[in-house]
Image 1 (cartoon, helix red, strand yellow):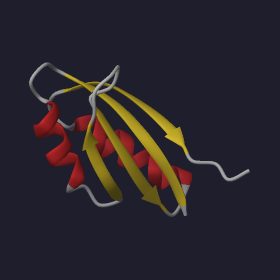
Image 2 (tube, rainbow, N blue to C red):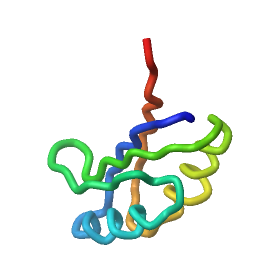
Image 3 (tube, rainbow, N blue to C red):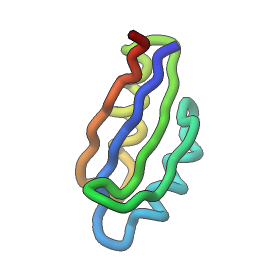
Image 4 (cartoon, rainbow, N blue to C red):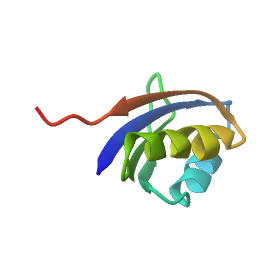
Length: 77
């Protein structure tokens, strides 16, 4: 399993709606509204890095109201 945090910036006033839509995407474990430089933080999981990339590019980034994402894969050292 590969997991990652996806840090998301949204358009003003769209944070809650973005988090609600993303929380329903298969592979998303959690989507939370936060304060600070990012508006939503998502934890996602997939079988492979390629599958995780497809979740981010084909599903998460297509949600209306998102202006920028940053994907941070989880590593186990």
